[in-house]
Length: 87
Image (cartoon, rainbow, N blue to C red; front, side):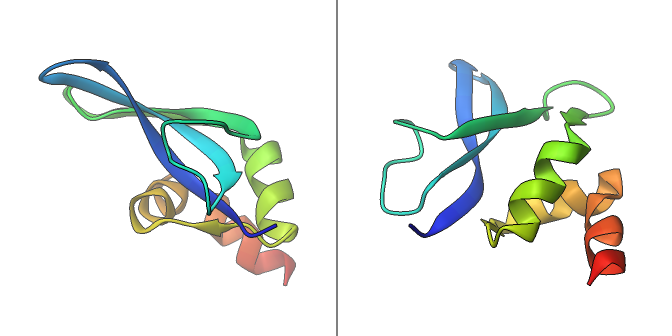
């Protein structure tokens, strides 16, 4: 199974927030997902995000590929530095 870490949009119109999820890359981003890793809210000032580092590192070590936006959030939170430090 090809696994991706991506964003799932939640919230109302013009008030979007997102969940970081792990899902099968062949499924729709709004449908079934394997695990939830955190959330991201770009509408607040400054933007708010919270990522469970332990779960994120587990999935990255198992071969999950993050989307571009998720990769940026993981870099901001320091998870990517820990991941590259393990390799």
